[in-house]
Amino acid sequence: MKKTLYVKFILAYLMFGIFGFIMVATFVSSMTLEQIKREEAEALYKEATLIANTYASDLYNNETSLDAVHRELVTLDGYLDSVIWIINPSGRMVIDSSKEIDLNNEILIEGFDPTVTAGSYYTTGDFFGSFDQEMLSVFAPITSGFKVRGYVVIHVTMDRLVQNRESFLSISYILLVLLFMLSLIILIFFTEFVYVPIRKITDATEQYASGNMHYEFTVESDDEIGYLASALQYMASEIAKAEDNQKKFVANVSHDFRSPLTSIKGYLEAMLDGTIPPEMHEKYLGIVLNETERLTKLTNSLLTLNNLNVRGVVLEKTVFDINKVIRDTAASSEVQLRNKHIKLELILTGEEMYVEADMGKIQQVLYNLLDNAIKFSHTDGNIWIETNVKHSKVFVSVKDSGIGIPKDSLKLIWDRFYKTDLSRGKDKKGTGLGLSITKEIINAHKEHINVISTEGVGTEFIFSLPMIDVEDED
Image (spheres, rainbow, N blue to C red):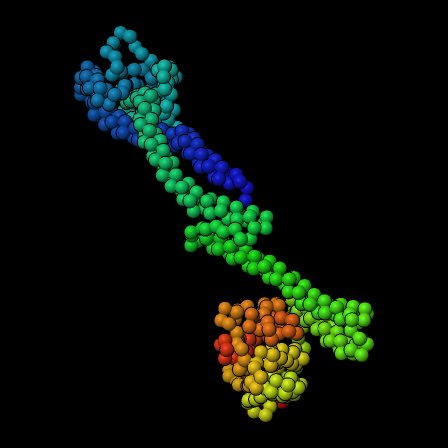
């Protein structure tokens, strides 16, 4: 958004006012004058027709005198504020209401042509050179015996019509000014509800672009702009969290690599300089080997998680017995269970329970969950692995009676390298990536995994898989 948006809107507002005045001064003025002219001509035509059918007709039928008709026309002249003529078809003036009757000086309208109205009953101009200003002239024929004996012509100055037009235009200008002032409401609304919020959003965007993801702003609106502001703030907060997680990620990786490397370096230096005697080398080489295995495990977990994020989880789905996979996973952990005197109980629904999934990756999920359960269980504790069927889904539960997870850490356990304070003393060899990998695998299957935990009581992880009826498949 350019910073001239508000200026552009102001210019558009001013152009609206300017063009409004131009429209009133030109088109509206012209149309108003034309309308006044038609209305005036219509009114005068009625008067001219009435005169032609009464006074003028009586005059031509010798039923009244010229003076009597002149007096009547002079009266009407004052009433109508106009000039009334009676002229012959040849253009000879019979009566002029603006002058006295003078039979000795005949007045002839040069070039008089009654067809000048071109099918109408009025015309404008100087009426064949009779006036030195523009006039509106209305014709009404005087007929007798189906013959046109003359014409009644009423003249009014166009100046009077223009004055009437100006009166109407004054009202139009006042209405235009009022409309222009009222339209300020639109400008105020635009400023308050559009421009100011957009400026806030723009300023916030500039702050975010400069790296200040913790910049806060407020747009109190429930419309699209308010939604945009909320979405922008949410985006910034998520980016800020991502940056914080990235810093934690780097710090955790550095820490988890540095610790075993320090141990390896220290033991090897001690063996080389003789601090550790040769007869103890085998023992400490075993420790070094364990540390290298820890580094290998951490590296493999990082590569696995990176591949899951970059390429997505590539699944090789097959139909297999989840109960058998659970039994095999439990058997592979027998040594760990025996060393901590932990009792593992399998509560499986049926002998066989077939699901459609990637068996290798589900084995990894089960191993990660069971490894965590063993790691965080007390000596002589209990672990339960259970399967249940509901709505064509198999729900697998891995539950322990261990240290549990604090309530404020439940939403964070899926984050990479995250370890609760309670687990740090017990998770000496963990990478903090197992649960992240587990969630990625379950999400790739478009299934869900949930956790229920009470601190000091134990933790239960439950994930779902689609059940397959092997008999129906056959």
